[in-house]
Image (cartoon, rainbow, N blue to C red):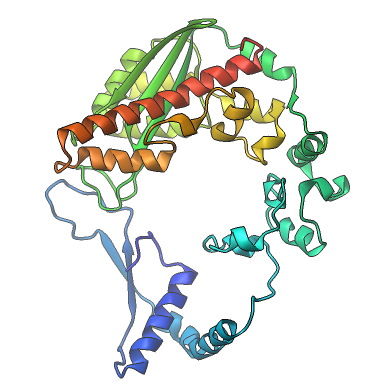
Length: 371
């Protein structure tokens, strides 16, 4: 049984090894099946989860792999008996899962090659050619604007801010809204009408800049354990007004609004009006700004400390990234959680989500020269 939503190649190898071990212990299965989550299953809220798991017979698919298991075992035995294997680093270090020895095997350098944006499988070619640090790679081996910008920045040690960022942001006008959602996707759905792993909004933060530097803040979070989607939608419609751009960082928020529309069809029109106002700050930043410390990433967590040093996610108590927010929400809605702990988690969730939108405000101000 796997928590994925389909049978993957690595699952076949896993099942082949388990089957080989089973047969070596005198038990020969007539067939082998793998159960995985059916992400089209819709929970009705009645406690009945029949149909949540899909089961696929993989007996024929794993047969060729079973024959290879003794060879794999012999090879693994030799590895254990010998010294450190001489295997070059490359894209295989992260496929199908991240190798726990990456920190040991990869060259310890200030600007590793995997910090080149969009490098993909060409990383293997650069490693094979003996390159270890971005600064050492000849410019003619790199492709595209982003890779060349990274090379320029790391060689100069200086940030690059193009004037187009200021003009693009200035054209947005006022008021401006800065929106961020937090979502949860349960493998086993708990709310009626939801599917496994469906990304469900449970929280948002909205900073409102009515004019340059004039900030207000609105937020929503429900930790009662009830399905939060409708209240989430209603509160956002009320808080976001009727005009002015709504800035996000990537268009994940558009997907969240689409989800709210599916649960609240009577609110589809006002939610669509919000969706039409969305402006993605990410491509504006990526087009006009880069700092060597960003290590090839334009995520808000990479950009923020280079533009706004006084704002650090590490300063936040308890929750400092999205996975932590999801874990905190699950704990907060658990009826076994104490009132004091629930209050603490709620405060931390509000602080984290609010930090995300304030980060967008501050980044925008710096790009416009208003910092």
